[in-house]
Image 1 (cartoon, protein in one colour):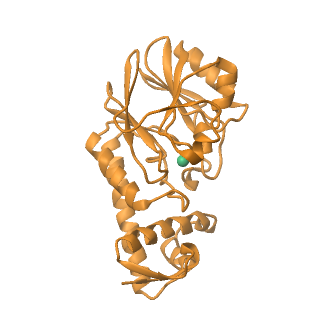
Image 2: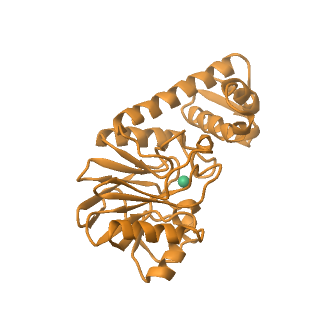
Image 3: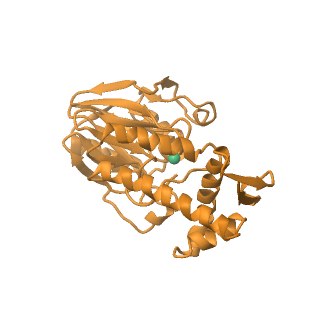
Length: 288
Ligand SMILES: [Zn+2]
């Protein structure tokens, strides 16, 4: 799940983004996936690690075949950034096509039920190796509790999953998302000082450090705007969205409600706002 503003953006099906990174597009374009989910063949040898598997649409396998031919490799194993369906949905078809492959991710009881293979558990600090590439997992919750990013040590680059996107901003879902965790995850990624970021959706990000700073500044600015709206007397999320997202197409106001809600829940946990009403999206909010 990612950002709706990527609708209309197109990317090639297969592309070489570095001497160690070949991308194969997941063929699942949509409101929340942009041009589709990027899947990555990582390494430089005859067997490489596949990061993410797309949604499981039949059109993906021929594209992956092209990418394998372009890279001149087979799949060594699969690593998943997290358990959302546009990342793990392709696992079943890949196991059907290529036989038994190790599938590694940070375990999550709910998401992993949909995965047809046994999960090899990995977590913060785990390392996956192949010829030419060392991938180190960084636990980065916020978009999803089980979310891992992977540092490619040889490049000081980063596979960011849904935490940082090629275009637009990450959705913090009301189910399983946490904006406070997300901002801490971005700060954690800043410590890695990634040169290049390979996102799960959208194009390669040439300056990873600048993009992380931009993401954090964007969230801070949004928080200020939401607090301003509350101080101006607005209390319901649709009203706040209409003010803060006035410059955006109305089609984006639905996802924007989730985003505003995630900010309000963070501010509530920090004791800076209060609400009347049990359901966050429908509650009446005010500053403390
Ligand atoms: Zn996701």
